[in-house]
Image (cartoon, rainbow, N blue to C red):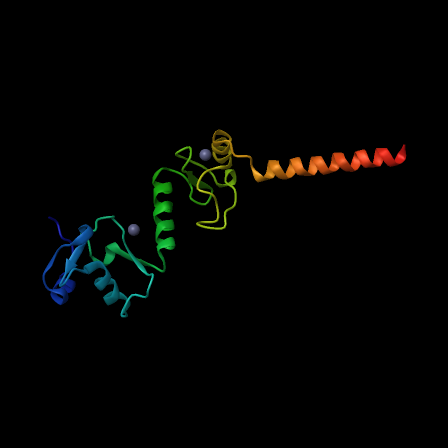
Length: 162
Ligand SMILES: [Zn+2]
Ligand SMILES: [Zn+2]
């Protein structure tokens, strides 16, 4: 087991070991990465704050391997950006399509009110999925309604002019 920790942290925390979830722990299953970050910040972590391991190694609680994010959403965004850039795409213009399992242009996605503001799958995939599932999109239904009322209005007009 390879435990990575700064010497002065180890001095403060005492015995460290691999604890629950594969994280470096000390004392009564306390997460070392969180304690080290609190030491760096000089204050307790705020509710919702997440400490990220830059090298993804849960046993590396060295100061230079840790980063704090204000929320889990910010943390996940950071991971998404790293994955995207690792795959050779620009995170500002591309996004992972969970339907097609590939990176696609952000303009291919519809807007969503949750998450990063876009659907997790592109429009083409969502359309195909709905078609296969036999969903009638609200848009089509609305259009049909409009056509019906337009036709009815026209008919009425024809009747009155006759
Ligand atoms: Zn992380
Ligand atoms: Zn797609």
